[in-house]
Length: 583
Ligand code: DGT
Ligand code: CA
Ligand code: CA
Ligand code: ZN
Image 1 (tube, helix red, strand yellow):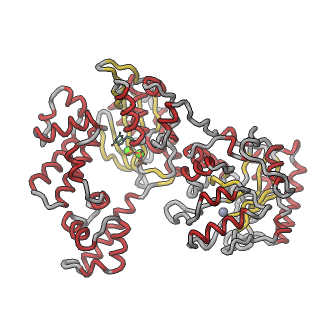
Image 2 (cartoon, rainbow, N blue to C red; image 1 turned 180 degrees about the vertical axis):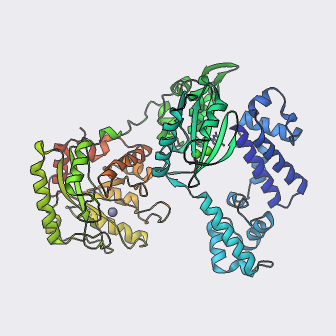
Image 3 (tube, protein in one colour; image 1 turned 90 degrees about the horizontal axis):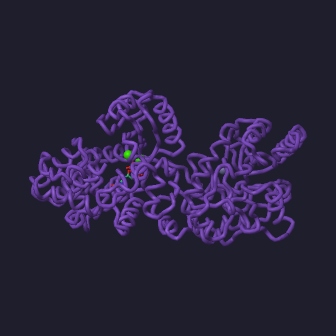
């Protein structure tokens, strides 16, 4: 793994020098070294320890000392010096088809381009055509090269990556050669989007396990296959890296491969401070291994509790762990119901009865059936006559449910209109058990206007939840712009963490800010079918990444507490805060 890190640095070093118009020989030397590090079977750390770095083709004295520097210090001074003042985005861009060092240097010098956004704007505005040597054809090629490169870099939603990883793990665990298999990387951290999948395998016969891995169903192409690692491309283009390790370094490898990189860098400094060395093979005091087989012991040897993978972003979790103040993260099992789900009355596919049945299977105490309001015409929002009918059907379904479990809540997801008014009149809103207000139009309003619009909705006492507050859609629509702090201060309504796999909205950091500011949250599925009720788990993952504890989550409360919270505002009673709402 360290081979790959150093190879990447040499590759970037080569591009940097080319960008600066340096001697071609030096440019090539770095590129060649990067290539031969990637072909290398042995681990560089081992090779360095044995004093054999200069036996690697293309690695002379200079590069060998840079490799040693990286192994010891985690950085290379010469590389840091070279990249100072050069926009990193431009160096990345040199991997795109058509973007050679000369082209990129001209874009930087003549048009002061420093980012992909600026480049995109320059291509679309025709600014590039003004440059000498940039004809129609060349610019068109650049446009296409950029698009190709960007789409190959697109990250996939966790909701796609996680089921794929789970299927691969299932298949791997059935193999006789595989003792243990787990997913690491950003999937284990439950990040909202995923670059590639990283799997970790324990096997008594690693080459065989990896060979079998490379033949699993769904594998389209084998990009690399070695004794300890393999990379395959799945049908659909997803890359999967697999790594096979020995039992006694499994915990350390899992820790390392889970990342994030930033978390790992910070953790290594903690290790150094304690006179230890942390690597993917274990925790060492001198030559003695003090931990490695078990991940909890890896953290334990650094005098830290096991830090939940969702927190490992170096956003203060290591400091919190050192002080014994890690949050008590919400768990899926703690949810007692779902407050945002659609039925076939609007754009859902399942009936009220089917939704209720699945909610019962999930062990819920309550479920709100929240269909759209009339302005959401594509979503077949309900007019007042349809509401009447739905209400009666819910009443009938309630009578069919012995013990009234789950409680069926007559709900609405009401549009917040562009002017901040709601899409049902107040007397209609007052009839619902729970009202979630959401933005489904006019996404481009200014920050001030959007903030005012949300606060207007919150100040209606019938509204208890703001649905998917940013309205972003992964891969296609960015978040709307609003002042989160002001919305948190407006209080009154819980903010949703929506589990729909393209939403995951609020984001992790916004949810964290909301909890810190004293806001209540609701983790909902936004299901459009009975089966989709299960996607609430993605909402829980996102919440955990946002340090969310059950006390802040209204739908972790028992029915009596939730029900009095739902009623509190309308009846003019004091709304319950996070602390009093505790189960
Ligand atoms: P992704 O794939 O972009 O969604 O994000 P990750 O976190 O899965 O990143 P990936 O696949 O490049 O690498 C997997 C893990 O390996 C990463 O979480 C931590 C570790 N790792 C990768 N590159 C480095 C590095 O340069 N330094 C350190 N310390 N760890 C790294
Ligand atoms: Ca990854
Ligand atoms: Ca990877
Ligand atoms: Zn919605």
